[in-house]
Image (cartoon, rainbow, N blue to C red; front, side):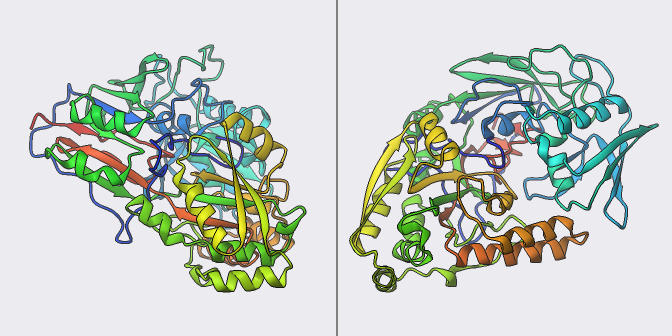
Length: 503
């Protein structure tokens, strides 16, 4: 993932279908229940969309790595459930001091790395210290408040310079991954983790195969292997499913529900996620520096149209999705009202406005088509600049050379981007920055969430961006498959409980 965000490129779909779909208002469908006896020797094939360029989770950006490696190959002291709860992992339990400055974790006994070496407290100290002190490692800054990391027996103690309500959450991600001190493995193509699966094979450009780790410290995986097949095109993925070549489709298109369910072998499954279809505004100069213009754009957009095009979904009117702390319904801040949008543009002296939308070319044309049509209704001419992702990274993300831009942000709890004036959003509000700082320093979860909610409302009222939809997990799951995660699978895909039956 890019620092402080993850961009879902699980969007490589056929023209006319949106990248990812959002959950239904009722929370989505449950995964199907198989009736046959699970086969522990089974192989499960799962369609994924975006293949990683390499496997070095220490330094390589991209949610494609987190999706398959965290939980399955690599672990931390704590982990997160699909529902975003924090649970024990390599640590059997932990305590936090009342002042929020001392975290003590009890390391499990009997954990081994995939090469057979034992996990030691020193490995934990080294991993977290190295992560914190190595700027080249992803998410090193998330441990910035940790002043010391020490071990006594099986107890690992982290001491902070100031309270950090995000620390435990950060430890469930890359910042908390535990590696073997002194390991010489080539992390770009190999691994040495502690998880329930090992890396069996990587055929680049095609698939990655994970094998069950029979020496795993916890409950063993339910299948012998999982084959992650990278099939970017949705129609090709559908064909593979109908030909019994794959057992699960992720990143799927809900519009293909009838086709994939036609023979009764698959069921469409919808799950919530933290995916945020974000329309960014460059607010540094020009007409978009005027809040009235940004607000007009927001009110000119029919968000329900995206939900309809997705064949599922939820609208989103602020920077925090429902799964994250601080969420509240902000639909009243920018209701769809083209006439109000026209009045705002007139007040701002921005009638007959011409703007350019820069969008990575792996997203469907449906997104810009809706935007072009809606903005045209209020007198804004939108030119679409479709670019490859590397160009987007250089022009938009790094150089902030854009007017409007669209990207799907998948990472959970990433509100920090709105408190960073140097981020590509170009949003700069000292009050929001102060509230975010207070939220981090809060030692009470409810207080922290309330402060985030206050900050998020200000961002929305400032029209810091527009959020076209809250994307979600859309899967087609074989009816002989159980235990397949269905929540936030574009970010994390824990496969330990998946099972396959013969009927």
